Length: 431
Image (cartoon, helix red, strand yellow):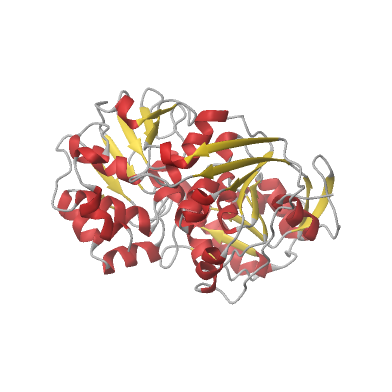
């Protein structure tokens, strides 16, 4: 019986030759991760049951990112609990401040994930790592505590949905537009507890950053995980970061899918997810002109170096609209330094952007850009639910970095063509 990529990875980690959708299995976990919000809850669970050591400290990573730098006493306490736990348990993969950042950017760029891995995280966007051909999904803090103690967990093998993107993508279109188009098609529960497997020439043409963006938002469709077959482009990216190459799994020709969708990439245009659902997707041309008060360029979805290059290419020599605050947060210290080296931060600062050290910050309504009642934000992050970025009476639109940068200039949602010619910025975008 043929298997999908997800089924093959689960089978390999459950010591089975074959698994099928709906089956309950116990799997060994390659990496179990948590952040400053979810780690302390898991730590308290271990303390509650008198567990004073972890199964394998080298298979745990803790990244302080949600309320970092700590915005108040409570967030500082959360970080201290996590830091003390890491020291006590001998967990060397603890990241805070310098050389750190948003966990779903930091861990891949540091080589912690390779194709074929099985990664579990106490954060819903752990699914990001499917962009590297790994099985990755989020769980609750009590589940993470169990994994830390035992090195394993149970899973129900998900059914797999197949998404095929054919054709050549158009200018200004990126991974964010791909995944928003999918969510707009199937809805926020359209992939409930299912694996989302991506195929097609348009997917293969995407760089790794765009693939990570697509996988990142599987949870916004209700998915258990997203996965893209690792290819030479993936392996080259991974080799620069680790000596572990991993295992490349390919779906069998007779693999069973519960449903299949096809998209013509040549017909996709930049899109925007309107309030208050990631599935409320419209072409940017339909919402152009909508007033905005804030633009946020960052997060584990679109805060990588390629995203900052796009934003800087559009904003170069221009100014952010005087009635808009444009917040730019590189998703990791490494991205920050690379952007500084390339002169991107200077371009963005000269344009009037507010640039922060790496943090999740405004994405979850934590800090560094909270919205007041009635305010409107265009964000490159992943969620726009009611109250997600501040007051429940605020409004959040989601888009890619090109639309975000163009909108910051005009003070309203705008297509990038309104402020820049693609041919003029293509060199910087494709560095």
